Length: 178
Image (tube, rainbow, N blue to C red; front, side, top):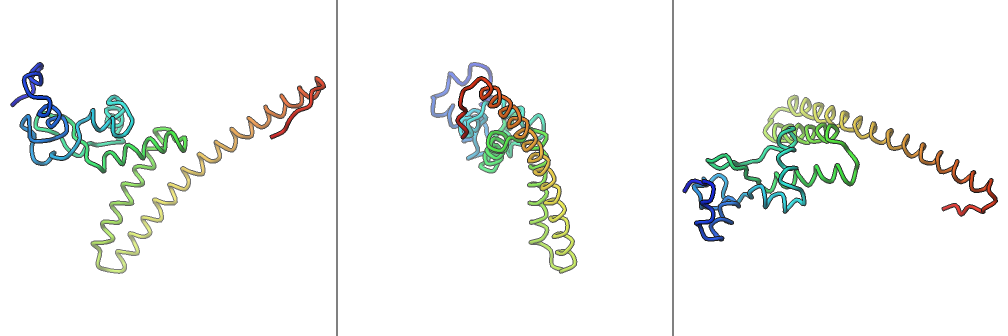
């Protein structure tokens, strides 16, 4: 059954939900069975559908599946990647350009791991380990740049706090220091 506007209303709610989740309704292929539609994936990750589309648009996320009609389908690994993006943003304060570097590093390291497992010669394994080390070195540089920026910001805040504290002291009020 094709998804034309209004057709979802003709089907039972369970069939609509199953189609949205990559189930057997709506002509969805077996390759997307068990994957989540964009609305459910967004809800699972605590982001908006628009955020998922934007992450895809800027290359941070590539949904694993797609229905024959072109609807995005998200696997558990996709959801884990979205959660990683959110953690890097909200918990660690990385911007999307920094996150791109980190995710590209993650992807490259995974590819190196797979090649390492498949490699038989020690020379090839050594080369792969050197590549992994190089990727990690770049990642450390990205983290160090963020830490430097945070230290500089903290120094600015401490300087400003000291000025305000001094102004209060000059006004004759004792200052409670944390």
